[in-house]
Amino acid sequence: MFTGIVKAIGTVEKISRTNGSLRVSIRSVDLPWPAYGVGESISVNGVCLTAVTLHEAGFDADVSSETMNVTAMGELKEGSRVNLEPSLAAGERMGGHLVSGHVDCVGTVREMADTAGSTRLRIGLPGPYLKYIVRKGSVCVDGVSLTINEVSVDSFTVNIIPHTADATIASGYEPGTRVNIEVDLIARYLEGLLVAGAGRGEVEDEPTGITMDFLREQGYA
Image 1 (cartoon, rainbow, N blue to C red):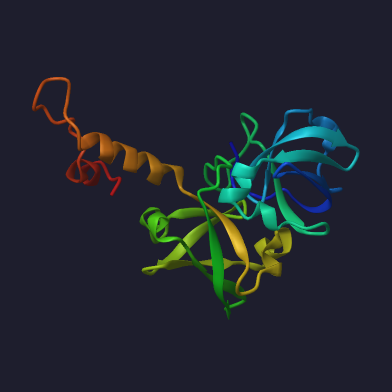
Image 2 (cartoon, rainbow, N blue to C red):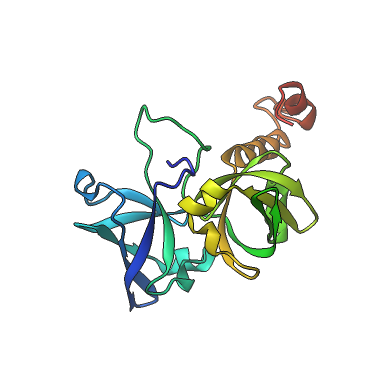
């Protein structure tokens, strides 16, 4: 698990392509690599990758063809900058929100505007995923935990404060940039509860009790 609080910016040093998959070598001098081991989970632009090799200033990881199909990882080039976050350790502070590193879809930056010292981004999403986006809810964009400001029929907006711009690759975004999106886990679980609630209980014709009215009563909707 991750928190969406980026710990360092890395640079793609080398990319090798084999049978539709990638092996990426990522370098960063801002993480304590000797403290990690092979098999470590590291979020790269919001995608959970496994370190298959560790070296003095970075690590190597494999990116499967399936991962490339559902993320923007296939667009990485040598020299690309990436957001890095090692997996969450027990007892660490959680400054963002729970992030699995399993990207749901790819969004596209549509608009950028300066707003009171921050940058407001409007990000377009594929239609099926907009149901998980709610005003003041959480979303993970390229591994960064952000709060949703507004939601429209095909996009949402977030604010990038100066600190976030400096500490992540968001400062390099421009209209047309494709970004990895992971929706809030709570939204996913609520959907599962609603689907289960549409079924019946163990006794014939007995409802399971999970309905929109139930969720509203419990403060989930």
